[in-house]
Every structure is written in C-alpha cells, then in structure tokens.
Length: 425
Image (cartoon, rainbow, N blue to C red; front, side, top):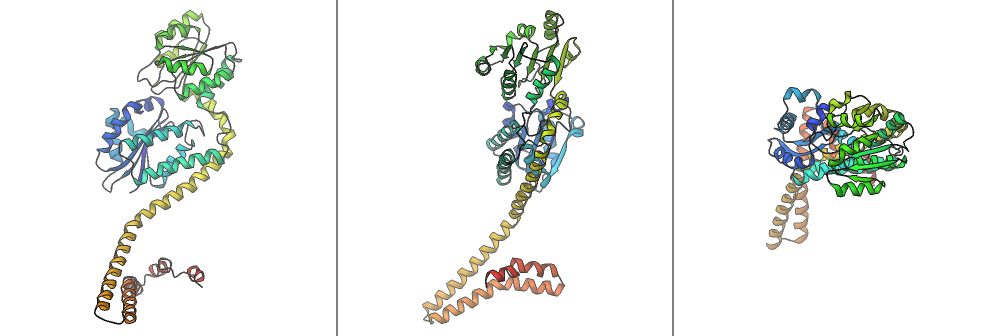
C-alpha cells in the first residue's frame, strides 16, 4: 500500500494556475466525498493553500495516480492539458518526505513559516471527517506534526521574522522609507492579515484600517492594532486615504476592481499607492497593474524580498532537512513492518493451533490413565517437532538449491546470530 502524493506548488505552477486549483474550505468536504468514491483510493487527504494543492493518498493495488489527477481535473473543471504540465507525482519515501517537509515549512515560499502546519492540520481533520484517514495516513500526518514541532524547537528555523507578511512590510519601507506618516488599509481578517497588521503596527503607522465582510471580525482585528474597522462597502472611500493596501480574503472573485482603484488614484492626485495582493484567487483585478502611480505586487512578486531574508535560515534549514530525512526513514521502517503483520499473525495462529492440538491429546492421555511424566515428555516432544518442522524443511530446501542468502537470514529470523548467543550465555 504505497503512499502517493500528486499536486502542484509555487515552484511548479504560476499563480494564474494555482488560483484555479485551490479548494476553498467550504468546498473541500464535498470534494473529498467525491474522491472517496473513486475506485482505487483507500486513503486520501488534500492540503490546499495559496501556494500549493497536494493530494496525499494510499491506493489499492488497482489504483494509480491518474485516478487522483482525473478527480482534480473534474473538481476544478480543468482539461488535462491545462493541468498536467504543472503537476508532480511522488511515490513512497519521496511522498513521505514531501509531507514532512511541507508541515515543517521547508517547502514554503517563506522558509520555515509556521502557518502551513495549521493548514496541514486542517487537511487532516477534513480527511478524517470524510472517512478517508486509515492506518497509514493517520499515522503519517501525526508523524508530520511531531516532526514539525521538533524542527521548530531543535533548530533556529523560526528565529528570524521572515514571512510573506513581513516581506510586504519590508517592501513598503523600501518604497516609502519611514512608515510613521503612512496610512494602511488591510482587506480581510484571516491569519495572514492579522500577521500583517501586527507587523505594520510595530512600524508605528499613522493609521490602520481593517475592512472585512464580517464586521465583528474586522473590529476584533482592528482592536489588536488600535485601528478602525470597516465593511467592504466602505472600500472606495478608504482607498482614497490609503498609501498601502494589503488584501488577503477567501473570495472567489476580485474584491477591488481596476475602475475602483483608478478612481481612488485620481482623487489622490498622483500620490503613489502600494498594493499587495496575497490572495489566491486574486483580490485585486490583475489589469490594475498598468495604472499610473500604482505599485501592485502579488504573492509571487514577493519572492525576491523573501529570498534576502532566507540566508539567515540556511544553516537551520540544513539541520531541519537532516531531521526530516531521519524521521522519514523511521516512518518507512514502520510501513515495511506492515508487510510482515499478516505473516506474523498467521504464524502465531498456526503455532497456537498446534499447541491446542498437542495439549488436547495430552489431556486425553491423562484421562486414560497414562503417567503424568510420560505425558509431559510426549507433549514437549510432539510440540517441538511440529513447531520445528516448517523451518527445518525450508532450510533443507535452501541447502539443496544452494540459496546461501536464505540460510544466512535464517540465523537472524531464528535467533541464531552471535549476539543472541552471547545474550543467553
């Protein structure tokens, strides 16, 4: 039952493709139900964020990664030629390493960012609700969570304040210099916007406004940064005052149109506006990038800013990668033991059956008046002979055929190696 991973991420696919593949949280349960109905899928989980959509699955012997790809194409209404060039497929140990690296933030746009661990946990719980977690994926995700925690505590991967949100603040400083006289407008109220709000608040902004469809949530976030909460209806007026705009919502369509931005820029009288669109799909209409006095950046555009901060994490990343490799090997060892579970169970059942038969015969002999000592001696001899017969015949057959490897392995399997002998001296 090999583990398979199929998906795309910020390294394999551009934003325009990723935003067509991402699963909104309110669609994931229904999509997983459809995945569970696909033939050949035994276990599965889907991790879908702005930077990646990955399926982790355990397939039946009849299943194949093509089943996962067809499901993804159907769910997102994409043709094979639209999706296939950007997909990667990983098998076995490579798939296991991938999930461990993802959960630890080693495969993120921002190396070591912690948000992905929470998103991996959401993928786990969604798969659990859909009844798609079995023995292997359940243990794999739990193992990934444990490894991610060790990476955070045993290395300095998170010691430096580098994130997409921090990169947005860094870029704003490069454009405007000091930010203490600047107004910032944040659209959305999720984890990314909250992190961005905290970073901007630390810069001593002149004013922070938070606009969100859910006004109470906007008020809650605005209170954290001593800002002002707005509804989305207030955006046109708020844009006129904003020097910096950061947007990250879960909307399926653009929140801010080109026309709205053009009107706001006209009213600002050529004062520049710095806009960062962190959403997938995008919140800002892409055609707005051509507007004069507008500096529009998407999540992909932040890569250069982020790369500057990654150098400080290089040593920690090497340590984390070694930890991941070691823990992937440990998980593979456990997976391999599953192949022996059936054989061990059958071997035990056979031995117990032979024991019961020998014991029943001994009880009949005792009931017939046979001396106890003689009955015990015969019981021991009979049981030993039955237990030793299969391996003895197997070793004889190996000797006749010249199979030295089986004879060598038998010393370990039967406890005949030198170390075992020393332990029993």
